[in-house]
Length: 382
Image (cartoon, rainbow, N blue to C red):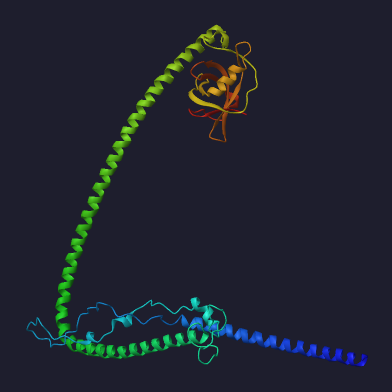
């Protein structure tokens, strides 16, 4: 019994090895068949894209083309010449472009189904008579191939018909060329005179075109000048309004400067040549205090002769100054002057504060001056 079992085990092992070998071989064949089938499917899809889905439709209203005059040319007028009947048999639909092509993407499942699938049982359908599986017709690979072949045959027939029509068109074209060549000898003599007249007409037309162009340019210049006049008039009105505003502002600043100069004169007379802050009306005496950094105002007026400036100070800065007063004395602060964001100009020392108008007077510290102070320069503290 033991020998029999050993022999049976060896036999099963050999059969297993053989089965594994056959499975590997069959898997390789399967991959080959699968790859060939997929390439055939993809090739059929690509070929289908070169076929028209439907034949070109005949237009409901046929095109009307000018018929060739086949009557002889004579000096006598002919209002009703004989016309060629070529266009009566011409098929305009053969010229149709951008026709819809066969798209098999929607039939991918049919292309991959060798047998027709019953939609109810989802199993291969069988013929009602023979009982065999259905491998032809809609829903099968053969059905898709038959449809593509039908469209290929229809397109081939259409191509054949187009070639026949091209032959007819070539004959008509040759006849037309021969007829035109026969009339060229007579026409050349007449064309020489026509060309001369056309040259004269062209010269006159060029003259007319130049005159019209000049008229258009002059008209455009007039419109442009009218627009410029309107813009200048508008700018003039705006400048006049701005000038009136500047005059009012200048008068206000002039009054403030005169008031401040009067206070400076009073302060100078009271301090023996120096500036006595406490002696000037409305002035607050000075002391030292720390103030937070940032822009505090700008320059309203400059007096280079007496080295002082009138400053517009921010309300927040003035409130900050007043908040640190302990004995009624104005803090002694050196303010920096800059133009823009980077250019440092000089330092000014706060001397007098005009309460209620956010104005102040400051002495220009000439030792720090890097350039002339201008109205609008920024006052800041680092």
